[in-house]
Image (cartoon, rainbow, N blue to C red; front, side, top):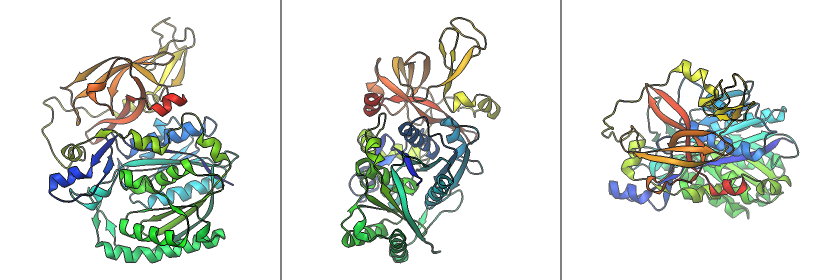
Length: 481
């Protein structure tokens, strides 16, 4: 039976303490912190990172043949964002890449489409990513969080979780909405949403259990996600009373509600510690109710012990960057501050970007077959032996490196000054000068181990300039490499 071959998650480095919001606005914002996408991140770049994690865990023999990208906050409108993800992951040109964007429930559609593709014998990569926010002081701002998840779906002995049953209940009601071009959503009075969601959720759960031939007592883990926290809490309490299942979502309390990615992130965290043969229910409340039941397989144990696999718990622990509330508002474009007195960056050229797609997006270098020298960016002429057109492409996105020198630039244009510029020597050869991100500038030193991450350098002329930056190498990755 087709199912989940691999999964990946991505949680950004930065956190915003809710107490900072309360102190700034003179309100009570609640305990804990929310995950914050960095100034150089968006839903596209985070989806790339989640996809890289899933593909690394799956291994080289599970190349996606179709990519579905779901988000409620696309970086572009009237342009497919999944194509940038496709390029950054270095996928085959024949692989279809499409967006399912606009609302949180789009994630359910992407998952169902991915399972249909897997059932037809294709390998599908489903990516779900959101940057959540709202007006200052709103529940969306304090309760939201940013993150991404990826599910690689296909068939074969490596399937770690099989779909058992699914059910949906749909109704038209105005609980949450945002007009095109608006930066924050409108939300109706929460008691109305609770009354609308709960009957739909109960009906969908009943239908899914009936289709699976199970009772509520057979559920081992229950995940309730969605855009209405009050209804989700009520449903979680109801299911917890009916079944002895663990209501499993350790991610949302730690980083906030991540919208489209919320359910899949919680599923990934649950599968990190689940045992074979367990049944996991994922319930999504967003413009209706959708239920997906999964059963883990014997292959899960080997997958959990796989090399180069960073768990959700690892990512929760690595979120050490504390961001202030004014900085958060600046990154979100809600606080306009004096920019550096330097020329604004120029928009990247579409023809140039297209000609160098393998380098700019897939981070593909070249290696000379005559002498073995590696070239970044790729070159036709070897700088070492001067051989011409004796190169083979070599993707370096997953190759770690070492900082050999660096500088901290306090004059360069950035939404998060100062800019840290490093020179990196990659393992097995090759040197690159690039920016470093997700790091305290005062703690950078020669000899630091780094990995590459796909980021948005800047936006100019309404064009997002994507490329790769260095970041500190995760301890879990270094240990498993």
